[in-house]
Length: 337
Image 1 (cartoon, rainbow, N blue to C red):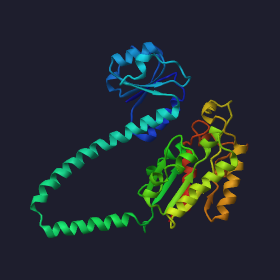
Image 2: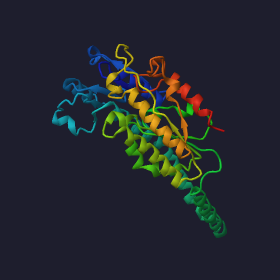
Image 3: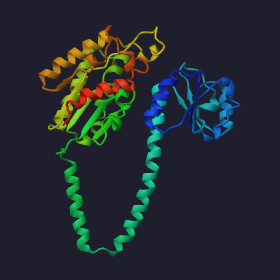
Image 4: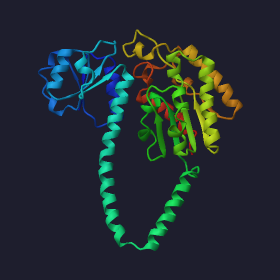
């Protein structure tokens, strides 16, 4: 179980993200008055909390793993900085990345145990096989390696992007389809450009769906032209390295800055504005048409009458709700065989 202190920022966004990671995960909210009276610490795996030295000491005395959120850049006491049971996160994306990493590690453990058992069995069986059989296996192994370096003849879909892709439950919406989630929370266009092999090439995709750029806008280091050019550069590199891959560029999704609604977290939306998003989308669309990349106008499918991301399609003004992903899935499936 993952326990979240009730006064932490983005708690509902975190609850939604944990559910995306594992639908069977247990979560609970802890109010200040119950810190010393909570009855289920024995089931608790992680406690996500803000900086409160007395409470942290209490959690550590219970030998609990603490994710310490210093969202307001609090000065943390030295004894907490390198503590083995404390993971310090400066923003919500770091919390999510840590949870995702731990989740992936947990998934790998049973696999590694099975792999070791299999290796032991194979090692024992090797004493009883003939040389001819061994040689034939080597030939098959070489053949398999060669096939991995070729483009797949069957469909293989890669979704490339940031947290909006990372949180997209592909297995739910594309059940029994060959989909790969290559989204990483917090990514910008530059992050993807630095890691194209691991993010795209290794999967030998028949189709790639590129959704990136919203974090570049928030970061404010790149101009509108530079962001659009980077998106096209990603596609150019895919075409150069996987020429048979069909490339689909999704428009950057809209945001909702309506602070009068409790759902919207303006700190999450940050400096993003739909007027700027529309300009970048237009620049990308024009270049995509010139280079024969498929352009998917998802933006217009998600907005309300006031050109804002519909509240029913979002969980915080930026990230997408289940209803939003349903709309997106309907549009993307039109491009699939």
